[in-house]
Image 1 (cartoon, rainbow, N blue to C red):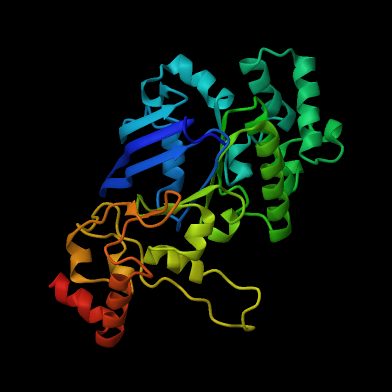
Image 2 (image 1 turned 60 degrees about the vertical axis):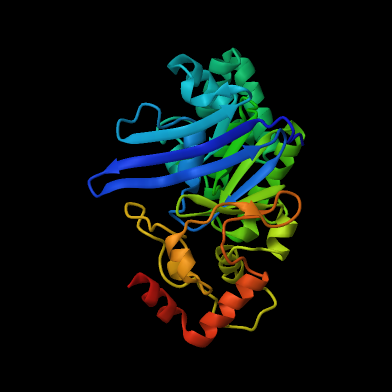
Length: 352
């Protein structure tokens, strides 16, 4: 893994959608790097901006008249947002590829899966029909698909959910991209197949030396499978760091909430799961201060007025955006104060 010369550098990225309800600030000021051969996990609740972020990295919104993108995305020294239409045709698939969370919508239902795998090989790599088919069958063997000579001629609806997801991975890996974006690739699968797919991605990424961005709403999915994790909330990165530091010495209350809401194997039977109270803010009317303030158990008046920025929170690049970080004297005092006085009273006092 080489992080001194990153493959991707994102600076001040903002993606805004113009809707009848108003401007939706789906991604709002994100800075991110992905090193060569590095595995980066992006976690957060649904609607936190994870999928929009990676689609912006791919420059998919370039020709959308209702979407505005600001900031800079540099991929292997090249400004993604300034790519021509012709360059983008070879950028997608050859340099960067995505595994979507629902293969039934990402795979073409009226084309055989073999054609969907070989078409990128023929277009980007210049392979002939026979050579592309042979390469596709070999890829399916690596993916652990039984009877690949028969499966390659089937349609998506003829395959199981796990098999379809493997085919979607095969399409993404067909041209050996430098960066693989996996957008919740195991959401619709049972836990056994989830593990198989994630183990498969780990092995292929290691063998091919690719960089990978793994998106999930579950911190447990990215644990042990990434070199660095970025936690997103309401369009922002609120905490980032290596898994060991993030899991053991988290500093943002939202990260703590995500960890506490995960079920535990050794917990009491039928125990009620912890939840993060409230709802994420409306992305068309974001608050001026911390966007997590209305749901935070240690919110203080400052949180509702002043927007926190990412700052150093520990070793190895661990950073957090919180005025009263978890585990620090100021954070513990804020939490104790709210336990005594009631969090609702604090929020109501400042809001008024």
